[in-house]
Image (cartoon, rainbow, N blue to C red):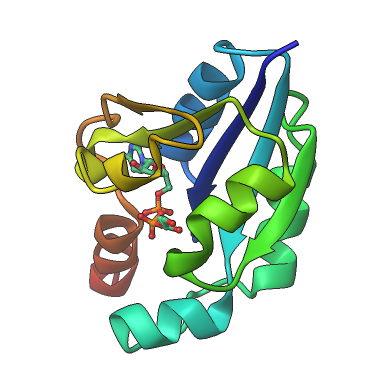
Length: 131
Ligand code: C2G
């Protein structure tokens, strides 16, 4: 039984998010998702997500291939989250390639190709430009 863990903000949920979670789930039997908190986003990006952490968690929890969801409060706690959840593999999109290799002493780390041409930032820009 392999346990997979992944992390993300998943704001303004879109098909790129579905693709990474669906593919991550295929690497094991149980998928755990760390959803970054509103405060973590504010400290990283200087703005809050469009959707609140509760709503983002609710959306991710509703997916049939997601088994467990928790709030990620800090990027530095990655190893603690991985060991607490007994994860065997950490999976992230390849925009993060190499950046989580430092946890590879506690689990395997894999980066999967991002879905091209879609991002939360781009969706926000498109919505803003609609007159
Ligand atoms: N993603 C993807 N294709 C896209 C957009 C996103 O595969 N077109 C993937 C990202 O690579 C990431 C996941 O979807 O693995 C979540 O992306 P974001 O919501 O942008 O998450 P981020 O703000 O990068 O938070 O601890 C890490 C952070 O919590 C990651």
